[in-house]
Each structure stands twice: as C-alpha cells, then as structure tokens.
Length: 238
Ligand SMILES: C[S@@+](CC[C@H](N)C(=O)[O-])C[C@H]1O[C@@H](n2cnc3c(N)ncnc32)[C@H](O)[C@@H]1O
Image (cartoon, rainbow, N blue to C red; front, top):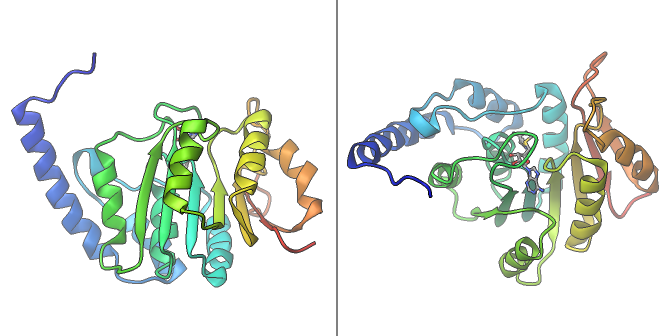
C-alpha cells in the first residue's frame, strides 16, 4: 500500500510548489518557439517541480514545433509526457489551442511517467491563457479505459496534432498509430519521436519507414546524429 505523506512532507511540498510556480511564471514570457525552448533551460524549481525535462535534441524539436505552431492546432494530444518537457513546449507555443491532452502510463517504459503531484504543476503551463485547457490521462494509450477518457474530453471533436512518444516498440507504436488515427482531423498532423533511434527495444525506425511514404512527410534529424529524430506526417497530403 502507498505510504501517506506526513504533515511535514505535505508542508514541504506546498512550499516547493509555491516557489516553483513563481519561478515558472518568470520564464513564461514569450510564445515564440526559440524563446520557449530557451525558457525550459532557464527554469529551476524545487522538490517534485525542480525541472522541466526534455528528452529531445533541441534543433529537431525546434523544427517540429515551428511546423506545429504554423498549423495552429486547436486540439493537441501527446502520448508520452514523462517530465512534461514536450507538453510544456506544445502548450506555450500554441496559445490558440483549446484542449491539450497528455496520455502517459505511470511507471511506463521509456521514461517512467511522472509523479501524480506534478499534475498541478503541469496545469500551470497554461497560466495567463484564456483558451488552453489541459487534460491528463494516466493510463496505457492502448487501453479502452484511456480511449473512453479521451472521447469524453474530445466530445466528438478531432485532434489536430498528435505526438507519439510513448510505447516505442514496433507493435506498440503501430497500435498507437492505428487507434489514434481514428481520432484525427482530416488535415491533422502526427509527429513521431525516435525515428532515428537504432537501439534494441526501439521499433519506431521500422514503423516510420513502413508508413511515411503513404503521406507527405518531413524528417527532422540533426546532422550526423544516430539517435532520436522527429518525424511528421500530414494526413491529408501525399
Ligand atoms: C520518452 S518519454 C516521453 C518524453 C517527452 N515526450 C519529452 O520529449 O519530453 C516516454 C513516456 O511514455 C510513457 N509510456 C510508455 N508506454 C506507454 C503507454 N503504453 N501508454 C502511455 N504512455 C506510455 C512512459 O511512461 C514515459 O513517461
């Protein structure tokens, strides 16, 4: 059974959150992609909220972000949030977005998810925005429970931009793609992380190479890099 926090731990967490929230507000000064990526590095908080970590090569994320922001998505969903890095970036570079949805499996592979306490911190990413509503689904992206929760949030609307960075096995990513394609807008964009990670246990390269040519696609891979990489497909374009 999970141990309950003592009063001391609760008070310490409260203090850490207050300081972290204040520091977060100081860095959220611009919607421009380059400024938002810089701000991730400037942020420093306390306790559970000490950092906003990104599992990304910055120039690859920058290029993807620019495409996403130009598309002006109203509904964004991300599979794989971990320490909130990309979730922060989607939120801050898309002031027009109405719903931004995180799906992450607690203790999931390829990062391990995030502590539930961090949700209140992640919600602060939308500070100062009238439009952004943030949602957090904690579960397996492929489970019925998760897709039911997603449907309740979408209320019949479609996703304009989906980022897949959760289960990196070939079977996992294939299932995610096939399940979530059904929730996408006709002109939606789907981003994939790790299209250039050639490691055991990573099946994104294989899946990406199978599907990319069915769509108009772009690859954002740092020169000479042998890891990570972002891929983007445009669903309505060949
Ligand atoms: C590489 S991290 C995400 C990094 C984040 N997108 C970033 O760049 O800052 C992968 C995350 O996917 C989650 N994950 C793994 N399998 C999953 C699944 N089946 N459903 C949902 N999330 C999953 C893990 O818990 C982990 O937090």
